[in-house]
Image (cartoon, rainbow, N blue to C red; front, side):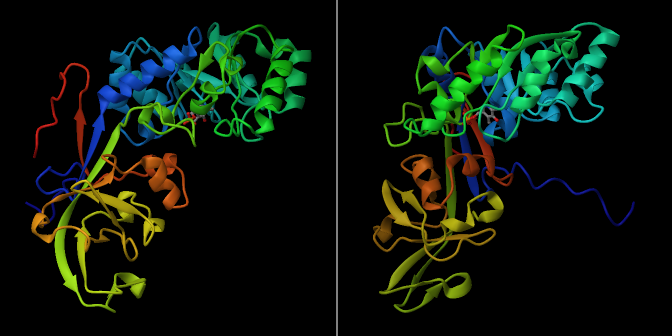
Length: 388
Ligand SMILES: *Cc1c(COP(=O)(O)O)cnc(C)c1O
């Protein structure tokens, strides 16, 4: 026997040993899907499950959505589409990034529908279709965001030379909104008009413009297909107004040490927080390596036993320190759970405290948590929610 052996993965820690439990409520995810679907009807709804379903777990999230009746999905990368296809043979999968060089054959083999983003991608997909038979496609056009999709001059060229689409069944013309979370922003209207003007020059196809917030801009923005992402996972698509979505993600950290410090003592790296009075500090086993953003240092908050407590000092790689001086010390112990996300910690509010957005918090959620999926399809209400 050799002196070394393959390492076991430290990921998916047992609930007893994990520094934190990440709980994903698949029932709430499904309910959010149904709410968005009904809101957008008669338009269809193709949930966006890119980036590991915004950090919640592609396999579990897509499984729950499938259980709720969803048969169309959007992903960003080809590899995400291939992973989704392996689990679901009978769904439509749109790859928003479209084709990479020399990827057409593999994309076709997995039955994925690329959102073609430039004339080169269109040429690659069409060449394969001419060789092997008709292929479905989406065409993504730029209506004013200047990020991805055919720019106006390429749309004009395509309109003038429709043979470039030979062999392709164009299912949907897609575009993406830059400011949908700001209903008053005039760019929304301008993008809507640009989208309508440009797609009228292309072969007739279904149309899709709205992301989560776009759905709440009203029926003008719904077209035939909506593509909600972040709202499915509980984030408010209507900032400044009440959140219509149910909470999906709950992160519960564990206190691994409690200490009393004298006034004028500092806490953590850089001595970035100094106690103005004798204070009690709880240390939680979650840090920026777990996606708990470093910018939450001295700015974030958590909830312990229903009461808010501030993050004090810097967030370090594996640890975060909390000022629990205001809490009843007899009701605090090592091993106790602290709500870092959900259960009173609103993800949008926490992201704002970090100078970020909820999308970044979600997609950065780390791999060292014990993940617990609750209220999923086929495991009945409450199943899996048992206390560790
Ligand atoms: C990510 C993405 C979406 C989903 O956006 P949310 O704001 O998360 O709802 C929709 N369409 C495209 C093209 C995207 O890249």
